[in-house]
Length: 601
Ligand code: ADP
Ligand code: MG
Image (cartoon, rainbow, N blue to C red; front, side, top):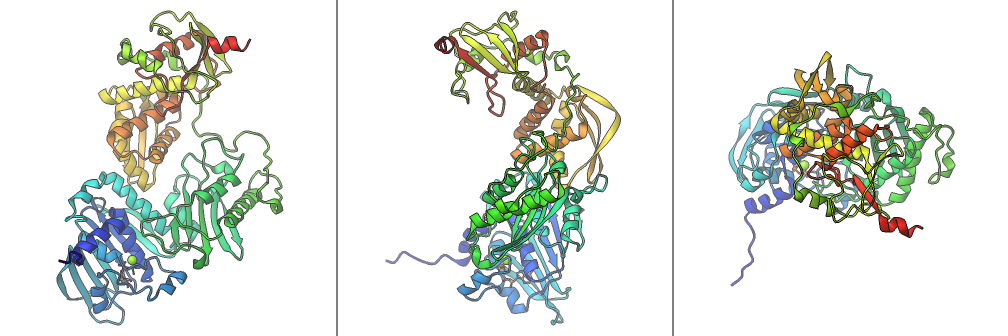
């Protein structure tokens, strides 16, 4: 008996949907791209419950004929290519003809569509690939497509969806990727009846300003310089941040032929162009658009993949780097650069200082050691916690050894007799039976504060310091979503935050540990770290908030310590459950053993 058979379309489409439509954001991308391909100049996106219940896209594009409207939902039905050859001259976003078929296999879809030349439009309703209604209707020219109850028939996929806030962030990220390429198209994004973004037809620069700028601050785009290079191989244009305008939060966007792409290799080219201009962990923001013959890139891009292969990547790398350097050379403090020697230019800088210092100011008078003691930290460590010290992983620097003696080096609360002092403004040195123990003061303090923050979150016992003059922090839509998520934890630590408007919060109080810092940069930094590290669950948020606040509040390296302060740090450090590494895995303490020392002589 033959056993091979064709899967019914509905089943095949569900499988394909898994590839194309992974979450509401991918559904939104497909719908908006279709509207753009249909030549729309105005596109409205209406979302409910982060796309779970409703994703609606209304455009004023070409619309479809009655037959096309039915055909559009068939698999591999497309108006965009007719032969394989067309793939090499592709200028539309879609071409596989899979999106609508995949969407209607996993949702309830209602579409109204009308072409300018038709008197009446067509209404089509499809539930899980089955047409349940098909009739004429009166509707404006264009297409209005409503996707309800996404994954209603695929419980597994539904379960994989993250919180509404996360899915909404994904939707907005996907939306940014598209709207940044089509500034001439007007867009609106509505979520649960609230207008989140209203983008009129505008220039590229204005679009960037509307999305990332903030009317109450200096214009965002005044911190950018334009880049423009035209070569036979590729045209590059766009904007890169001036080194002095770099902020904690980097926006990094590459687009090729109207499509967003990730490109780690080209990212390297941009970063290299900034060599020596940015502080250590700062990243440049950029919006860079490549225009290239479609034959020179791999067009058979999977709809969900954003990494794109170029034919001549090394050359483009050089062109891109030179282009960014040229722009920076023209507009910033970098003196004359010889552009004919691309690839090996060493950019002279006035000093080794970063052009832009971190936003978080450090108050030299701040004394973290006189903060009130916290009951959670007066418990004695268990024997298990000492074991952790012995079993700590190998340190990063092989010449040193992690402390691994037979006995604990100190008993907590005991007078720390081995304290030798501070070295290099950075390390606390202790003489122990086994050797010379070095403790990084900043990291030690991060670990101490982190533990304090976590326990304060857990019991909501943060001590708040009221601000004399409340400050207002303006946020972008995706940050508003993020901060909403983190509100209860931020409040538990001692932040007093009140939403002022759809895009701002007033800060009325801050945790006492942070009382000497400017609240806006602190909060901005927390948001950007949480966003960068991609926390999704409440527990992850808590940890990220605690860690970023601890990093911000901890005594910096380079700060000289009194003997009393050093004792305090060492004692508090050794009372922690885990003190060999910071919460993000950096080595706190390292020991040069007696053996190693005697070998040197
Ligand atoms: P693809 O975009 O890869 O062609 P889709 O499944 O996304 O495949 O769409 C199938 C076809 O339906 C498109 O080729 C296009 O002809 C038509 N279509 C889809 N959405 C729209 C729209 N908003 N306006 C006009 N035509 C559309
Ligand atoms: Mg499409």
